[in-house]
Length: 367
Image (tube, rainbow, N blue to C red; front, side, top):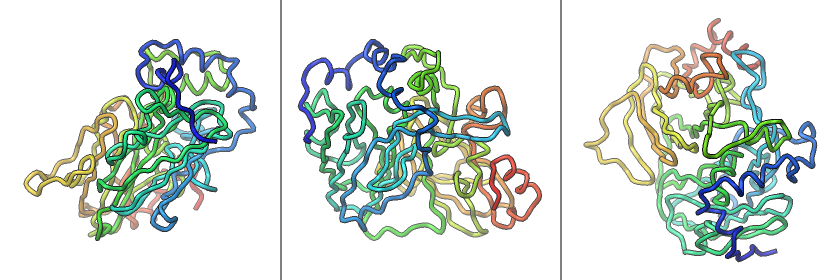
């Protein structure tokens, strides 16, 4: 079915509502999201990179109700997680939080279908960075297009601005992003040359009360009094972030050029700091940084929805070095420090050390 052109209260709730009344109605303990037992939900996977050039520039994103384990073990203040989320899955792939990384080459015209046929809530898709027609902007209030439960809608998104961009649901935006509905769109410029090592990293703080309330817990989410209590890199809390398969450590060899695409999918600024390496910013929000602005630094404040691409050389004494938010109260799991918004640069030679083995015990890696 086609998406619905909605002009009444439901559409206005997608963007301009400033009160908490709609969200309170949606997360009422009797809401439809609780009809399915939490323990029966699928679990999220690590965000996959979807090569849209190989898929004919077409992809279907489907919201999937799933459990999201940020750090599933009891080590370092765990377990931490969301008992239910609305995770995106691409085509026949696994659901993930953040959603799949959609990657293509500049100049393509993307056909991105939002399949809401199995969802309980209205949703939309909004893409930052790229320039598109009015009807494809993804905001229900201003486009008149809301993808209601049981419907599908295809957005035509030109890949006309190279760079790293954010996408997210724009219906009841703060609540739906809090439930995991965001991801990365990467548009490579023509002739793009990848670095020796390249990583995508979305950071976010979470008020887990919203997901817990959807799951039926006796808690009350309040948009006007948001209290983040979980902090993630690519949807995981440390030490799970260091897990070579489930997390996102930057595994490097001496001399590597390392390129990292940082995206802030949260609502707070996060000053990201890398230990013992100095990086330069080469791109912001789809714009190349001029050479004269590419000075070396080791901390960069990333505001909500901002995207930065940084580069550095793996030129330190080979070892294990942290990357973390320097609002250090974000580097925790509950009252346990360290944890949260932290991962690391891991030189391959350090992976044979007892220190790395201990970290892997904390992370739950048995490889």
